Image 1: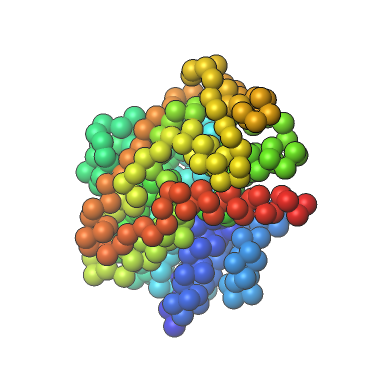
Image 2: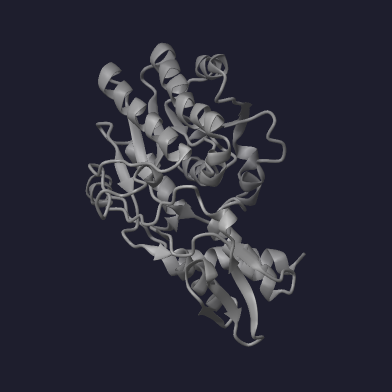
Length: 339
């Protein structure tokens, strides 16, 4: 039986990855912050809470990381933990740099010292492309991050490559484009949309305020993307891979599809910051743009090229954009309708 350690076990990806690894017969150890009370609800939602061993894990504490590696015979280490909200990284840039960036160096150095045979996966991100230099973006596209989060992830990404090349560690980075699910955190725009419109439909909210509606993303299903993480660590050689659907949709597209699926006849009036979404049947404004949700520097367009992953890993996404929005919308609407 292989043993895998997942940092960030309490997050969306951590939960889906734990489920995947358990199905494959792994022993799964999950790292969770001691202060993160009540954070493991996703594991409970997937009915795997009792199958995962939870240990205290702190990205800022080098000795804690080393002790975990010393005490456990770990074959695969999946680092999914981070300060992962882009908007918050502008408010907390130093903390983001340490937790999202420098912490990866702590993990890599711990692996190098304690057990260099451990296979390591680093959760990189399409936010590293930022102000894109070419479209679509692949493994050779130059990076131009536009947030403290993206910059911190880029540090971690290059450290992973450096330890692979310098110390021959089996260390991979998955450059994952946006991936969502019903387990997504409430602070992310997709969840704001599915929750907000569901509340409006149920009469529990009047207005949904959002930021840049024209931002375009390559959105996939988190359950598909964790399969790519696992596949990367099963290869003969360590490498980095872009994981994406190859389709791009705007925030407005996401809103339109959500509204359609819950029966809101939505029409738009105005442009840019003045645009509003109107419930046509009630002749009532239900969506407004609030510039406080804009980033200081925006990432306007992301579109991934995952040909390498499809060819070498045999990976491909199974859930379409429409199906993804449907999964999220149904989950939130059903939950709210019972409250």
